[in-house]
Every structure is written in structure tokens, then in C-alpha cells.
Length: 372
Image 1 (cartoon, rainbow, N blue to C red):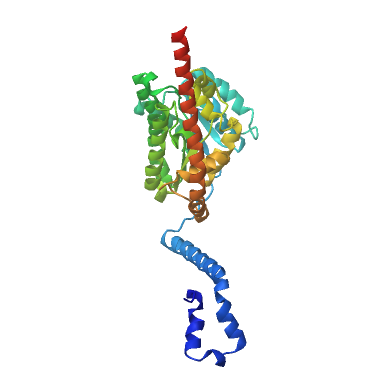
Image 2: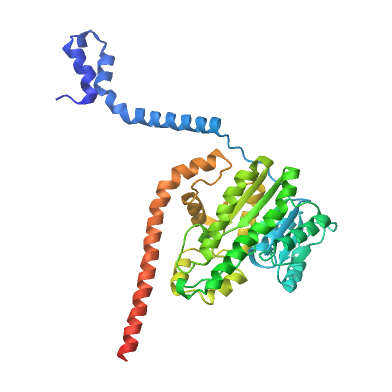
């Protein structure tokens, strides 16, 4: 039986037309199937081009105009240390007016002195410090935001960086701790955001930044209390972005990896062995590095902000229905999804292996103790 790609030639032979055709045409009919891969490649390329054009026409994804930080009022919650303080420094170095919000007044004053060393000129406004727990009373948070706006002007960018971490096995976490983490990490972002949104809507401009965590993209051993509170931040950010985008207000969610901060040092004191071993598969970042990436993404109006190759892979893997601000970003997610999912399966396998190995070691120790 003749191969499918030779059917045209066989048909011509049966009808006696083969001899009447030019030699080059006969040769082409005999070998056209060799061009099949090229033809298929061209069809795929045409399909991709058509898809991009359709995507652009149906839902134009135009990146927002970058926010100029020089002279802008930036409020940073949790700004007395760690990533929050470094974000405040990065914004101050670009000429922003800074309001620091945190609970510890002593740390606030120390951070204020450190930030003001980075003034770009003698006329730059000094850093305003406000001591308040952003997770406790909304009316109080609203009041201090109003105070800040009266002194430094309307808030152009809010950075929600207040947060706490607990790493322990599920049954070892105190029940009240689940509530406290949700209050600080979630409601501590809701309250300041709620306080600045009305003015931003009136002005038709603004940036809202939420500092989540890579533990807010995937659940890990030891983070049964922490991860859900950070996952909640993403849900808030996605819903809020759809509401406020028509007002030219853009939301950024940052997913920093383990970062060398006082908070991480405190967390490591009680972190389970499994969590430590899993965390070691990813590198340790410096807060200054993380702050630069986050501020850049917030200024550009990017929804996702990730640090390093692992962070980029996680953001692409977990993008789901999250907003995008450019066609390029969307296409990158589409193209890399399958590859990154394959890599992620190896990561997950290694994490499971770590957990099983630690469990077996503990059981062996128990058996040894019993025999002794």
C-alpha cells in the first residue's frame, strides 16, 4: 500500500498524467513529504502569531506608566527592620518621603536614623515614624494614616511588610498562634490598605505592595500556620487589583525567599529539622537585594515580584488566573509552564524524601532509647 504522502503521485500515474508533467514538478511530488516538518513548523508559528494578535485585540495588556518616587509619599508598615527597612531605604534613596509604621518605637527611631543617612540632598524631608499595631484596631490605623497624609501629603505607595513567622509541626503550634498569624500577616495588610484606597481612587493613581513569601506560593513542612496567612494575602491582592485597576492603582505581590533578617534568625531557633533541610535547597538572600527587586516591580506596576531563578519558576508555576501587565509576561508563563512543572516534581520528590528520612531517623532513635 502506498504511503499517504505519495497518494498525489499515485493518482496522477493512474490517470496517465505523470509523463505530461515537467520533471521538476514530478520530483517535487515525489519528495514534498520531506518538507512536512518545515510546513508543520510554519503552521505552528502562524498559530502563535494569530493567538498573540487575538489576545492583544481581545484584552490589551498595556504596562502602566512607572511611578516616580522622587517626591512621592511612601508608607512602609513593618519598616523598623528587615526587608521593610531596606525597602524604605531604597525608596528614600530615590527621593521619596517616608512614613515608617511599626510597633516598637525604639526600633523605629533606630531605623529612622539609618534611613536618613541615605538622603539625596539637604532638602529631603525627614522620615516620619508612627508606632502602632496595624493588626489590632482599624480605626487606629485609619487615624495614623490620616496623620501621615496631613504631614507628608497623599500616600502614593503603600508597602505592607508587617508580618511574623512561626515554624513548627501542626500539632505543636498553639491554637492561638493560628489566629495571631492571620491577624498580623493578613489583617495587618487589610487595614492599612483599606485606609489609603479612598484617597488613591480620588487621585486616580497609586501603588499597593504586599510582601508575601515563597511559603505563600506552596505549602511546606512546618508552615501550617504561616503559609495560609500568606496565601490569603495573594487572594486579597488578586481581588483588589481587579477592583482598583480602572482607577490607575496597581497592586504588587512580592514572594521573597529566605532572607537574612532578624525575623529569620528568630524563626530558626524553633524551626523543625525538615523545614531547615528543605529551606537549604534554596539560597539565602540579602534584604537589600530583595528590596531593590520589590521596589522596581512596584514602581513598574508588575503584579508578581520574585527573586532569583527559584522565585521566577514558582511565580510562573503558580500564576493561575493572576493578573499580568504585558503580553510578554503572559507568553513566558504559557511557554514555561510544562517545563517548570516537570522540574517541580523533582523538587517535591526530594522534599518528601527529606521528610521520610527525618521520620525514620526519629523512629530509630526511639527504638535505641527503648533498648537501652
